[in-house]
Amino acid sequence: MNIIQDTYEKMSTLVEAGDTEGARRLLLERFAALPEELQGRILALSFFDALEEEAVAVAVRNEVTNLGLDALRALELIKTELDTETQG
Amino acid sequence: MGFDSIDKLRRGVAKARSIDEATSRTVSRSEGALEVESLQSIFADEEKQALFGSLLKSRTPTVDFLNEIWRKRNAKEAWTPQELAFLQVERIEFADRLKLAEKARETFDPEFIEYMAETHGAFQLFAGFYTPDRAAELLHLQFGNLAMVRPDELRKSLKTFDEIKKKKESKEYKNNVKEFEAIRKRHDLSDEELADILKGSKTPTREKVTQNVLTERMGAFGKGIDWLSGYRVKLKLPDIRVTSGPVNPNANMFGRIADWVSTVQVDVRSTPDIKVSRGETFSQKQAHDIVAALSKNEKAKVRTEVEKHMKSIGSVFALATVKDDIFMKAVSDEVAGIAPVSRNRLEGGASSLQHFEQKKTALSNPAIQEYFRANRDAEAGTLYNKTWYGLQDDAQRDAVRDKIISRIETEHKVEGRGVIAQMVHALLQHILQKLRTDKRTLMPNDPRPPKDRNRNQGRNNQNRNQQRQNP
Image (cartoon, rainbow over all chains, first blue to last red; front, top):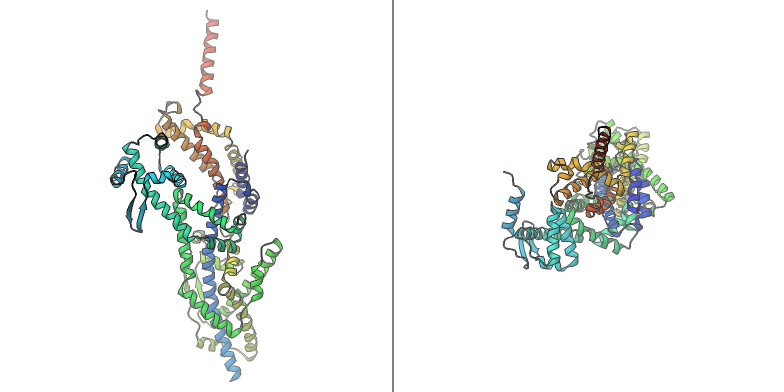
């Protein structure tokens, strides 16, 4: 059995058992031995996945800034109010 | 009214009539002019010829038709008008696809690819096998192939990039950063310690420390917001924010925000479109009402709380704005596991395992032949209402073989939405590619099913026996 078929079968078993991390580790161990064309395809899949993550990260970042800024503004107002009372 | 393949071909011929084999031309498209190369020039360039071949393969229903085009090209024979018309139409499509690949290369330039590798741990694991330039080179090569055989995949990623860019450059975000900078300066809200911790490279121990710090800081961020919301609720003031979608209360703050953003649907990852209705702006009067409602002891407590929460919120906020790349890395590491692989098969228990065992043997060459023999009559019946041995020619037999390969692909596809499941599928496609190329060898047209020979043999023996008994 060649390395591609063996990797496919072992990864399938791991993925279907829910062990994606194990499948990733196995692929990384054998990655350098795969044909360059297949390496390129896997690299592209990983890149597109990272791009999707980036989209989520940007959305999360924008949420954090909106949420954080709303809260900071409010907290600053309370602090200013407390300062004014103390001074008054 | 429907169009059959002949209608489509005739329309193609009409479109391409003015383009001959040796000349180039410019075609007007809604997205701008398209430089269409001559067939001669495509075939003269080795790389373009290979890409054109991939495109034709993905768009030709009959393999024989394409083989004939290739055979004539190598033998320097003239193509039929039908073959030429097909090629002329396809060279326009080819120009379109080349443009798509070029756009992807320009958009995802080496600098952007390097940024992605630095900020996305999972991608770095694969990109780390190469120098940054080589990784970009390999990806750019892939964009060429993808433009030919999976253009939608490439278009989707370009769309995602546009959305990212739009969000990164939004006016609202820029104003937030500016305002935060002013608040940060007034109250000294930087958190260099957190930035340094998150900057570190990934080792298992460090990852654990980083995760703990991140969870603690995001927890503090959340507590700050919750504390403020609590005060507003207590005083019957409008809540800070109303969001849609269930949120996992056990997740840390990134996880909770990711839940809001995705409103649980993983599909949203491709088109992250935040739908939240904003609460009312907190006013000076509301701050005054809160402070006025406090006793003297409470005021001291509230001051300590306010300062603590401003620090916590500012700390994470500083990462999101001032140290954007560190924040993005932290979030992407956190949300990387957002789309877990379906465990349906596993939950199926013994029958699933049995199914997998069957699948495992089905990819070896003898197993493929056995599978092919067991299914060819049924597929021939579906496609042509004949048995395998009743099929007319090689074209029909190839169509049945292709159908069986597609069936193998469907049956072997690993269930799951995550990228690892996609990678497993890429391995499968690579294996099946060989099967497609060598289908006549791997699924041979053997002379006669052994069952028939046995049956005839049995009948002959029976006759002989009868003859012996009844001379």
